[in-house]
Structures are given as C-alpha cells and as structure tokens.
Image 1: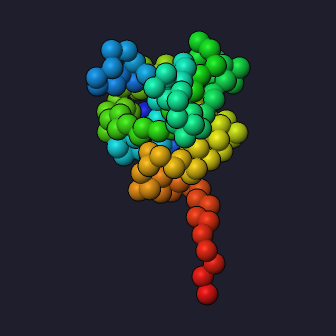
Image 2 (image 1 turned 120 degrees about the vertical axis):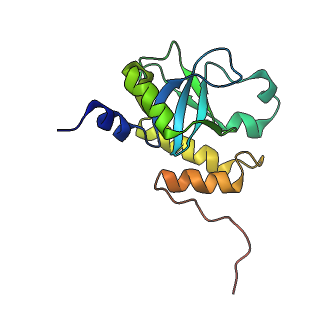
Length: 153
C-alpha cells in the first residue's frame, strides 16, 4: 500500500497545480508545475499584468484557466507562460505538500495543457528561452513543431 507521501509525490509532475510561497512575493501563488527537480513552474495570475497589455506577444503567452474547471480559483485566471520560476527542490515541495495536502490543487485539463504548450511553442519574445521551451516539452512528453523555414535539399 502506498504511503500518503508517495501518493503526493506521484502528483508532483508536469501539469500539476500547487499553492506555494514564492521568495520575493508577499503572498502564496498558484503554480503550474513544468519540471520536477527542481520544481520549475509558471504563475497563475488573476489578471494579465498591465505591463503586458501593449505587447501582443506577451498577451499571447497568457493561457486562460477557468474557475469552472478549478474550484480553488476565485475567478477565471491566467497562466503566465512568459516567466519560468524555480519554486524549490522537489523534496521541499513534497515536504510542504505532505504537511498540508490542501496545497495540492489539481491538474491542468487537457485543453489547458495543449494551450500552455502552444503558447510556449509560439512565444517569439525569447521568453521562455529555447532551452526552457525544450525542457518544458520534454517534461510534458510532447514534441515541439518544427520551425518553419526554407526547404533543405
């Protein structure tokens, strides 16, 4: 029989959503897990930041996430796919979530997962970097679309 810690560890994978403190931010944030060791993630925000409004590339890198699909949200929100944050080591997150299982909030639904990967793939503002994009796709077990360009012979 699996221990509670083992069950939680199995949930800490790409597409999982956790509530965690983030250094430099005065409140806890919902995070969409991208990679697992260390835990690298995107923030979930209640709105698209004003500084992004004037840049179509940054707006396109925001993925809607619905309160109807995620009861822990106060309102429909946005996954900010421009900035990959390192939340903590997997061990630290596992320890915090095991101590308070309510920190584990659920998983992206398939349409959100697809929208997140599409936003990451089409981002042309150099955020996330090509290296980060490749790591995200690898962690999700997905393949990036080949870059368009001239045919090679």
